[in-house]
Length: 474
Image (cartoon, helix red, strand yellow):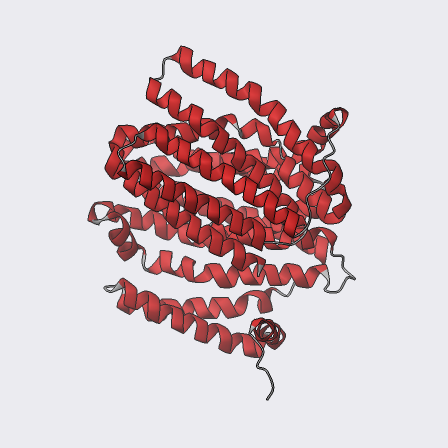
């Protein structure tokens, strides 16, 4: 249910943001939308040092001992304020002296409160996740995004410019934080207002391994585009960006799953009820079941998908998207397994491993892009995820014990093959191919799982029955 809450909120929020960008592009033109995108990127870059891995650290700590929220929550918020204020002041001075135009500077100024509010919202989210409550933060985040989009579209329709768009973004983000505190008070309770400045150094030091991993993960997502910019043409970067945007749009699934399972990864043990191994297996199975249809669609229906979304001029984005398709499935496994290893082990080990993967990805890009251009960059992503997945799978087995890989994956694999067999002949009609393919996927998945893992089928059916309204007896 936590996964459903987060996924539903992400889908609604992403649709609202996409609609806002579409209206802004038509209303403001390239320069106006560029100023807004620059403001978001610039303020987001300034915020990178502010988190310091704090939110991931307190998620792990509070999940293990929920009373520790009283000692960490407001200390984290205060530390973020203490770091963010001088950073923003310094960065805006740099903007001024470098000579950015007034519109870009003003947009960055009005976006800064909203971007900082987003960081506060992530701290609230960590506390909710530690208590395994996915509904309240999903509701607050959805309201934030819908309100920002609605206010922004209204401002644009009334003739206001890009600066007003930044104001509406910040208003929505601040309302989201207020909603987060209100929902926290009604559900898990707001932690005590304890701020001890002397504890900040220890807090920052404890969170640094998590910050290192986050930094490496961000680099893994950015470096391919930067290298492609250096080694290929601007048009090639555009083609790759079109394919990568579709690939990136699937990441809400693993992020939602991590939000649902991260706390359980922390407090469950091999002998608990349920045992850690079983919960980890089911989290991986849920990831594979949800992501397999997306993987198959990207691999066998890449051409009609690219034509529908980007138009015929982006037909060359289909091959990179096909090469990235298996990475959709792999990144779900990598994200969940990384969360497991960080929740229970030394996060510095995962930071080191992530750093090795960044180096490997850079090497692959420098080798494959000159040889194959855009498809080489796409292949580098998937190859890196294959190596990463194999490496951490071994560590996961050592941590939780023997994993039933066959029962975990065979149903979704059978469903994926059935979906591909049905969709390929129908690729001239994307809606028909997707509809028929999904029906075939669900039918094969259920049929195989009834034979191979009936326990999981019974578990899901029992959960569904418990969620259905009961009939009153007469």
